[in-house]
Image (cartoon, rainbow, N blue to C red; front, side, top):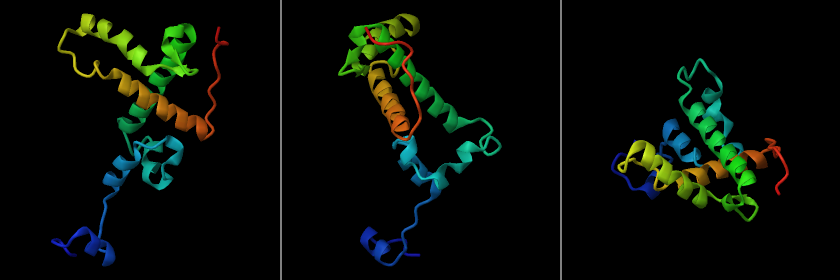
Length: 139
């Protein structure tokens, strides 16, 4: 093992090691269908993740994306280019969050980024073959 070697030298000598958790974190930003299965097998086994941590977060993101789609189907202000407008949805949520949780609430000023990320995740799922059926036609 070469502890003080540069990255190029480690790669050349096959001495670069990346642990599984670091690799998993890197792939978490990719759409569900593009992730290598060997890194995420544990997420499919309830006994390996008793609290369901990552699975629960993924399901929350999918639920957020579906809610954004429902909002966009029911109010044209929340649509841009035929898709949910994360920015407008975020702007609508912020005043309600401030009223409910106070001015120092963290994360709601950039909530549109979370919605955008959730929509990207759902888009990746759809490209991987997961169906999404509209609840009703757009007016």
